[in-house]
Every structure is written in C-alpha cells, then in structure tokens.
Amino acid sequence: MTREKLVALIREKGSYLCVGLDTDPAKLPAHLSGDADAVFRFNKAIIDATRAACVSYKINTAFYEALGTKGWEVMEKTVHYIGADHFKIADAKRGDIGNTSTQYARAFFEALPFDAVTVAPYMGEDSVRPFLEYEGKWAIVLGLTSNKGAQDFELQASGEGLLYERVLKTVSGWGTDQNLMFVVGATQADAFIRIRELVPGHFLLVPGVGAQGGSLEQVSEKAMNKDCGLLVNASRAVIYASGKEDFADAAAAVAGQYQAEMAAYLQRFNG
Image (cartoon, rainbow, N blue to C red; front, side, top):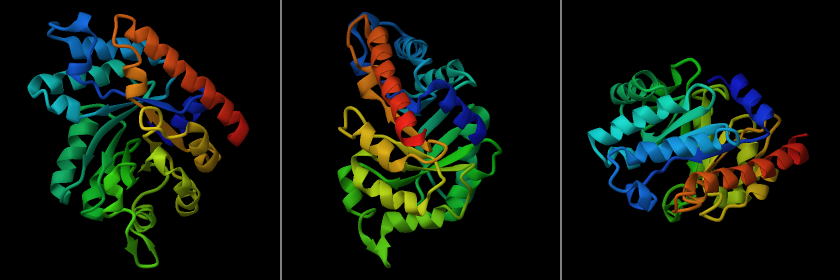
C-alpha cells in the first residue's frame, strides 16, 4: 500500500487505528476451545467486527510461529482474509545480514501479502535495505520502544545525543517517508516532540496505547503531522475486550471508541 493510499484511508475513515492480532490460544473464549481452527475463527470474527473502525492490522508473528506449521497456515489465512483495503503489518522484528534479510523480505512481501514488516536496525543498513526495495511496501524500523529494556541501549548516550536519536537520523537516510516508518512506544510521549524534529515526515507505528497505559491524546497532540503520520496500535484492549461469546461485539465497541476519539483528534490537531 502506498503512502498516498494510506493517507486517503485515514482521511476517509477518520481513524489511524491499527488492531493488533496478538492472538494467544490460551486467552480465547471458552466456547472456542476444542475447535481445531479456533485461532482463525477468532481472528476472522475480530476482523469482521473492527474493519470499519481501523485502517490497519498488525499480526505479531511470534504468536503464530509458536504454533508451528499450523500457526503459519493460520497467519496466511488471516492476512489474506484481511484483504487489500487495510494496511497489513507483519510484526516480526527481523534484521540479519543482507542475503538473509532478502529471504525475510521475500517471505513477508512475496509468499505472504503484507504491506510492512517491523525491522531491527542493529546490524546496519545492509540488514534493512532488502525490505526497502519493494514498491508499495514498507520497513518499520524500531526507534524508541516502551519496554523497560529501552534503558539498556536506546536511551544511552551516543555522541551528542541518545542512541535512539542516532538511529532515527541515520536510518531515515536509508529510505524515504514513502517506504520507511519507525516504531515509537506511546509510553514515551515526552519524546515525540524531539522525534518529530528528527523525522518530521515519516509515519510512526505507536504501540502502548490501552493496556500499556499510553495516552492517545498526548501521542496525537505531539506526534501528528500534516498527513496524520500515525498508526496507533491497540491489541489486548480490543481483541480481549471480552472473554465471552460476545467478544466480537465488545471488540467492535472498543475499536469504535478509539475511532471516534481519533476522528476528534484529526480535527483538533490536523484540521
């Protein structure tokens, strides 16, 4: 999906919501237990319930890889079921030497129809470059994450700034705002002003709103640019809004609340 189409989709829906399909078989509603295709049935119901409210879905591949061959089959069925009208992210956090990254890019962009893959930049440009060579596809590079371990490296001094700042400045030169995004955790809200100084035009994938406590209002106020420039992910808050048979209706209600709030912020901060 091109940037132009993504921006148009955000404008059309008044939403920059990304629904995370971090589907854990242990957390599925009891009435699905014993179903051999329970994970896909759950995903399908969530997708049907939230399509109208979101512009993107993020599949955390770890939850599917842990299931072996069956998990890959479910992931493939899920990404095809989402279809072409939503921005599809493989949250795989890949990154390896160039020839290996080339195969990862083929896996997610050719064998599977994802629009974007999350990528770790530690090994440098040649590990990211293969993901940037597909027209209409995106690399979403880890920038500043919301986990406790961000203190270990990302927030350490590097030259005249912090390491994550160096990553943003350096990586932004490897691609463009047409094929490169950055992951920035919502719980790092105070950093968004500096981040927008470094990468004013790039889209940011923002996890951490909802169950992790990030503020959608603060993120929107500090990080929105002229094209919105945000995909805000909510996973557990949406897909596990209810653990009962009404789980899809509950997911629809929560996603709708996010969409309504986002529509207001698009008017306030991007109008």
